Length: 481
Image (tube, rainbow, N blue to C red; front, top):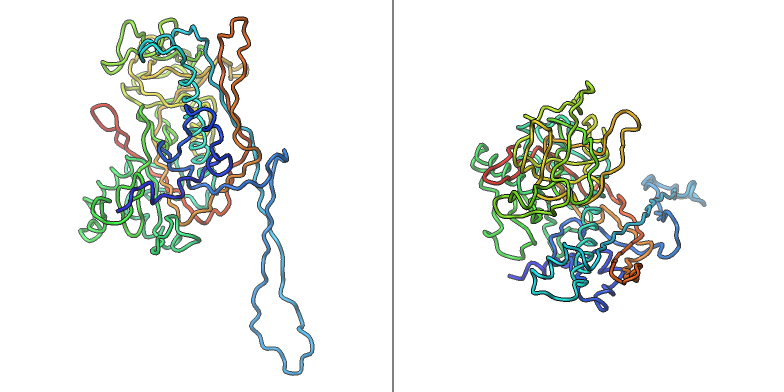
């Protein structure tokens, strides 16, 4: 049996490996852009092209000929001319591009990095640490952009558990079950090239969150024995295993999207379903705020989190605006320890939930509640909030710096019939920068990267997304779907 990495040859499909040839690795080995070893599942499924490099064009257009229909009528024996040529037409697809990038910056006298140096043997040069963080940032950003590209697919190709018709309608019993598998085999069977290279059976691949597998296994207990027996755990069959593969059911191979070290899974759209409670944040959040005082409290009885000279909570609204659902005078009883809530700027109706969470927004983050001050209406989290929310977004209607939403978690179950559903266009390859220090003492170091490209739907009939309510883990228990 071969190793998983040998089998998944398409894991080299990414804008770094295909386009840029990992050039920066030759210069700064600390930046490890190894998509093969980091926990990614969506980026490798994007097909990458290098069409409009260096042109600066906002879009690239790809033209496809449309061949005419076949006329199988007879031609008269005496005919000297074909009465009508078969038709030829064209259609085009456009790929838009945008610029993406990020930066890491610290002063060499920063307490954070002084502590880091002392804790790792007192090394004098911590710049490799920053480069390493920047390399991880590239991989993570490409992964979330790839996931979001699949989410942007036409709603006609979306299905919902329990026969529901929208995310907003998903209820506690609408979990991932076996009923979707047969329909996938009909709609996605033998379309295009197999997702798995060399797979003669053209098996579909379904990427699911851990909670969907938990819910799926629970559903097998209530189905008939024949259907239940068709599930095979990956350990039970021979041959090449896919990375993160956990089993096969009716010619569909299931991959469990890996959860990060903080318990957040990219295949879960946190709080995107029906809203339980939504509150305004009425005081600015500065990067580093939001976790308990490290001198007074330990998170999970272990971690002294964050810094001392920050605000150790976020402040919720204590007023009342009469909105439905309420976004003021919040009932704190709706929040519980270890709830995973979303802090966000954007509210959207796009997923069928009025004023719902937008999981694709770059300013939507998920945090686990570890402390509730019900009297003062404050929440503290397992980790600081690492970016600023310091602009009043209420446009004169109040004071709002962000929203905190607790809602139903939704599973994004992506099933692939073939590769090629999403096309990535590289307008300008990935670049890394190490600007010179700008202060008088050469003490502020910055490392940055940018990339100009696009992620676009290419063949929407090659994949589907099945949305379901999903169970999520929490310390010592389970948040049931």
